[in-house]
Length: 365
Image (tube, rainbow, N blue to C red; front, side, top):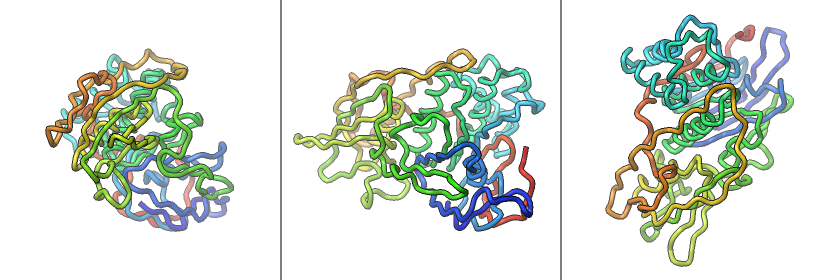
């Protein structure tokens, strides 16, 4: 997707919230948007998700998108699972399939007990889990997250971290805003700042590995590829759509021909999957944990249970097998079967067609 000279204002004579935004949104990337309160970050995310249309400029190549808004409309007349089922049906799933996938995502976030609770009766934390689930069950090509971690307990935050890593590893793009500067630190492929209505590349943004390592547990994977085999996503050598390394992966070639890869623990499954499913696949020699940092505070709900471990992806050759000592928490797990819907949005669905500038309008509430 590409934004060319995009501007946005509310009202015919209203001030420009955004002006002359130029942005290329590549597939398989994690992008962080930063800026002060009121700078226009949320407006930019709404444009990316297709919730708003630009007042000036053009957006082309729009992918299937899903959006988690900063404020979830919890007063809608649905129970949690009925709301997810409703959105799933809007995006092409049968009612039973949409309900099943919605229930599975609620369970993954530790909110299964609230499946039949009306949205208006949910706590803030559980409402946020529903808001995130509606976007993830869409399995979008572009996932837009506006403060999506706010209100989640620690377990649910880890579930969302893993879901983001899975989306990116599978070729999707994730664009997010979060007030915590350490959120997914070291994982973003690029960072941008909104200031004075302009979108500017962050002075410290860059390709994966350029940011400071993320705090918390990390996993070290020693792998070996065929002679001359590229790492997943290596520039100029990997076909479009092929697996790629998660952002924040630190790569160190070793004299014995192996490669040492260090990654935040929340991205270890995605890294293993990328190594095992690239062509030719890499042989995993060992997987070990390295270091641990302080956790984050909890939200207002019971912690979400850790996602169930799924079988490792079948290797394409006898070489591509995980080391038997791999801890269960870091084994390469396949994506859960639950999320496979099309675009889902909390307040509106984005049109798959390109977006040109639209008449000025009042902000949505």
